[in-house]
Length: 374
Image (tube, rainbow, N blue to C red):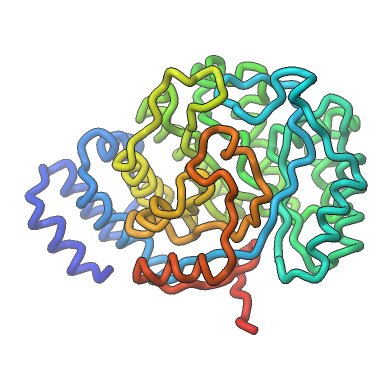
């Protein structure tokens, strides 16, 4: 969006001085404060936020919207933690399942001749599986597909498997890099406020551990993504505090690839009484995340979580990435009541969705290198 067009939209809106001052900061490419972030959540309307978020998005990425060819592997739903918001982990032995190493390799072999560029591996924190168990699986994956990017294991999974193997965080991550780990996803961050974490996932690795693991990975040359679980019992101030901690770490390392807001879904978990956020709140959240995280190159809408139509709308609220083809290989959000129970799109589907939103589709690899068209 041209800066003069954006300024005219803001001017015509006749917004109060506080919002006008924030807008001026954004147009001058100045960093906004914690207080500014909270104010945007509390007072700014969708038109105002869309104009600012679009300005930031297009300043960084023009009309380009990225996607990749990927599939997921979820090794198990057996988990030592019982997070109250989680719909994925096994509630009892009868509902538990586990893929062994041969099962996982068979899934990778099914993609041996398919032009995917990434395998995404996350699951429950299994009590009997350490770094070497999963490291050997990564090594086997690389033997089958040396070209594929392995993005695997949340910081929570890494914390457990590294300790179980008797390593420090730095040693464990270095060992996983030797096995073939290329990057790590952003899951497990939830909300960094420890009072909230105590209420929603009190057993899980705390926020300092999450941040420490990502910082250590970055220092070893392992990039990562970041997430925030929103729409449960957190406040707007909690969201901005979370974004601020991520922005500070990105200032130090510069190794976060993308930020993904993750919407709380209320099916099959202990928070079923909490009403899910509205479409307006979802779009507001995307926009403010884009505005606040000035040092993140990309904001991703995870379409299996919010649905294709909302993902398409988010492209007008700061989002420039729609994740990938998925190929119905994840059930984490399906079990939580996501709209799309069989999440899969081919590249033509994704490109059409992007083009219909008047954006330009760009196929990328996992670290945002452009994949040339065949």
